[in-house]
Length: 361
Ligand code: SF4
Ligand code: FES
Image (cartoon, rainbow, N blue to C red):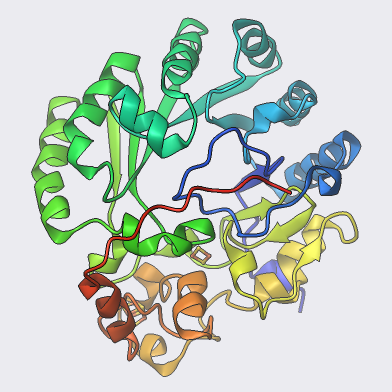
């Protein structure tokens, strides 16, 4: 039987063009070992990867990093993805965005910009970014609005900025954001290293809930607000990636193809590279994409559970990072025999200093 009969094509591609970045966020979910500049795919290789992604069925391309504006060939990649018929989203810190560059990108078919923000106030935002970024982000947002492009502001929430939540919502309103993503930190890559310093307190989460709920109501029809919960505090895990190898794929700067952006964390996975293997073969047949697709791989805990079609057993990367086996039930789950590992983290009293993200090699 042809495996492609049973497996849907991917809808989205996260194209991590580079790991180089002007910011040093302690919550960065990129891997500890970043791809160096000389390991990055060439323009021709990215153009080919985008063509293969479209042929495979991809309709949404998220150009990300690191900072995608660090790639001088970004306009060509935007234009190519758009010409292929894809909806093209730029995921950026805003640093390096000028009026001329944005006009060029928009002219080539850029459809949407997602801008990161670290906090509501200049001093704190700059401290959390490890760079004087705040004013440049305000300027970038103004450029996006002036160009008539839809703007999403993305803020990663953690212990060091949760108390500014109301101010963050106000900031997004001031910037004219069409959408605000308030995402509690997910602990992968560099962020896992800072987990104890970033973990919000129960009191912070309790205080956030009514603020977010009121803002969602007040801004309905003006600014959409997405609130991503702090999953360690939840009784059930998130439906990570809507299931492994189900909807989206990631291509890392060096061409490594990942079932999820954090999948290099699973050191037992054999990963393929789009420089050597056609993307369609990787999506449908590779050991990495087929490893946790569907339900066959599940432990008895998930396989016999009525929620397995809702959360797909949670997150494979989290299961691997915390238990050493990616096929285990996500330890966030209250039905997991490993839930105690998560509770131990929540009970940890220490709040060590943040370790800022180091540069790419
Ligand atoms: Fe989800 Fe598995 Fe927990 Fe059931 S046991 S809720 S399927 S993670
Ligand atoms: Fe990799 Fe959840 S982050 S499966």
